[in-house]
Image 1: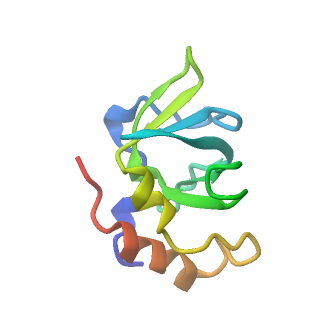
Image 2 (image 1 turned 120 degrees about the vertical axis):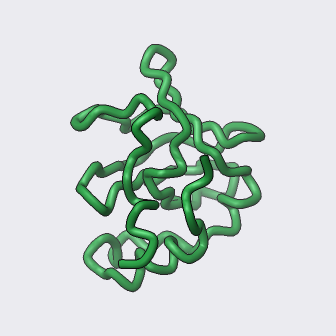
Length: 117
């Protein structure tokens, strides 16, 4: 799968295998985008699904694990290194297609590209 490194959690993010992130608030570089609805730390396929609530009319978005800049466990907040606009224009999340469909994840890899440091 191209851009496989985009699906890995950054070593400096504070993420530890097995950490439960469901319900954590998610903050883009320019404000809140919602709460973690699901996440996985599967090797080579780590991601978050964020329920955006009313921000984009109840849409769910998928964020590759590498977009996580840091995790604040005390305040139950995940900080991602993308803007609200970048996240809003990501490919449509389709729960029934992921993660079993590699071409589905490829479109996210192409959209998000190489991890931002």
